[in-house]
Image 1 (tube, rainbow, N blue to C red):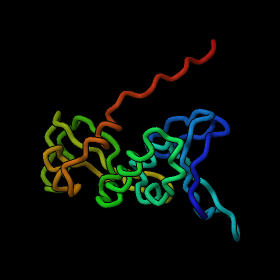
Image 2: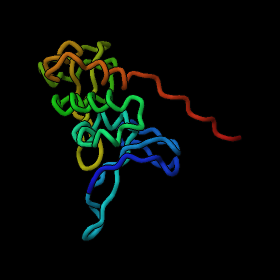
Image 3: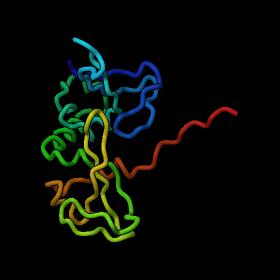
Image 4: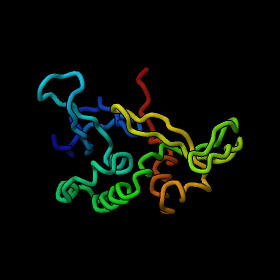
Length: 170
């Protein structure tokens, strides 16, 4: 079971990382795993946008051959990003940045309450073929929790505005 990098045949697949549709013709990353519902040699593929795979599944993405990333203009940068994510495994847990709503959540690093209205980093973990919520981290605790101060590429990806979605026909 080798992971694949290929053009999307249709626009029906959704990215497991961000949840948005993968547009037809765009390059996508497929993580191949044994099919949990199949028998024998059956396998299934979990699809990701290429940048989402580099950030959310860095161990699998970093294992890709550099030649496979050659068609991408930012292929070497994504490969380096995935290498950094594989080295600092907690970086792949970053799912978003938000303002704390109630002040009851605790930081996963310092165990202190995150005050209402302060910025916090949302964490998820890959379990059973999906990302499951696992808590929050203070912005001030981020460097200590993730083991590196260079978390901007992950934060930029999750705080970027969503691409415009096409309007539905009347």
